[in-house]
Image 1: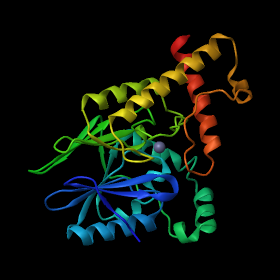
Image 2 (image 1 turned 45 degrees about the vertical axis):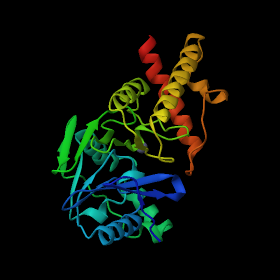
Image 3 (image 1 turned 30 degrees about the vertical axis):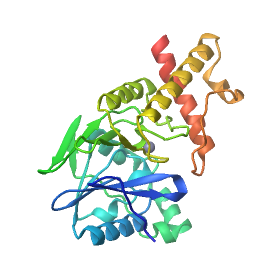
Image 4 (image 1 turned 60 degrees about the vertical axis):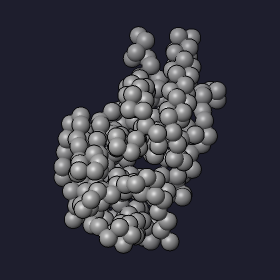
Length: 281
Ligand SMILES: [Zn+2]
């Protein structure tokens, strides 16, 4: 059963229960635009069928906010569409074939979770931009901004006519964000939060967690500032990166509902060490 929520005149959202993710759909006059495809093709296909039925419009474009698997493994449900991403997102996706998405790892997924991944294949974006991209018709404009921060090339999407911001993983609502990507940078990410606030969004669809408003951006700014303060003191007190696991007082919010979250947190803390050390040395 696919339950779509109508968020505004032009925006639909599908909340993914098991990891609090989102697939967002924007309705233009003559077509639909998806934002992110989720973590498995079967769900993406179901959501696509449902919204095409509800609106009697075809999907023509898929925007990828970024390259992490839980946002792009549904891409094959949109092979007949234009798939749009930043150049850095495409570059990382290609490099993942040699690291995270090797034949061996993908075959393991196909075998261990056949109901979700039996036919999994990696589908790359075919429309690439740097910094900004826009899709519009006479009613609304869909503005895509590259912010980085969460990953190289991470983007957020704003619809000014409806004051809706779709953040991808540049916002996790009421939970500890993932900032352990090898290119994550919480200083850059703080700049992104300030850019988002300047847009004065009224409704925010985060990468994970419940739909929210600007107050959650401020919460996450406060959170990253606490992380930076903690790590600055840790480094200035002379502690080393390899001893981070011995500490259990790094600031955290609620755990995200996803397998292996503890490892994600550890990688976020280690990455924070690197970016803070680089900044203060
Ligand atoms: Zn992500």
